[in-house]
Image (cartoon, rainbow, N blue to C red; front, side, top):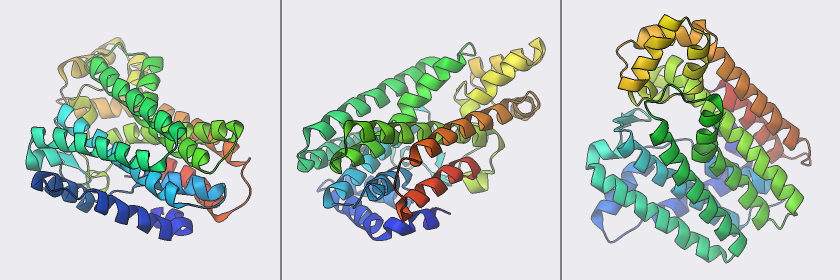
Length: 321
């Protein structure tokens, strides 16, 4: 389905990929090696695609939009490199993580390289509004990562605290992809605000489904191990809901697993997440946020890009990886 979504901006998407490869060039061999490893890993490139579709839905995709889409991808990839080190992850997209292949130090430092490369590209855009937007967003993402670290192993995390983390950690970059595209298209403050909300709600829905797939996804499809979140002590919505609706004894099993960051009772916990309605509740929440996306889309003029955005919203709910 991603190929279908991408069709309306296929040429521009190819330009973004070419720019990413070009900007990964470095005289330092380790940067080149880790950078190439990341590119070869593939991935949907969903966030830069979102920036391109947002731009196309408001008119045309310019060279500035191409650079901005690359900025979004570099920031996202940098966060992944750092995340995998913090989470001690060993598998992403079905193959060893960069930190497994090259070590933690290399992954952190190449992540830093990608952050700085993103800001070098932003300077070329010569738009202080976009620079401020992305500086603020990058700071919020960092705060979200710290908040997630603080919540790890805490079974008392509330639903509100969980949504605060995923908004900062994941959704804010989706929002920036859309809002930044609107800025570069010369849109009004009202349109920029609507595009921000569109991206934010899409990002929240995307993360909610990610958290569902951690408990009911197929590792062959997702490229991740089932129960990774439990091993990292992450109190995601399926478990928060399950603890609130399970028997005291069953809730204690989940709480202990989170505190000890252990997937020893994974099968039992997966069953509890399903039987208590935790999985269903998370999917319902994702659907509500996608409904908000579709409300914002109604304000856009008909176009192939708008249709792709509608399809992307549907895909975010139905995806299996």
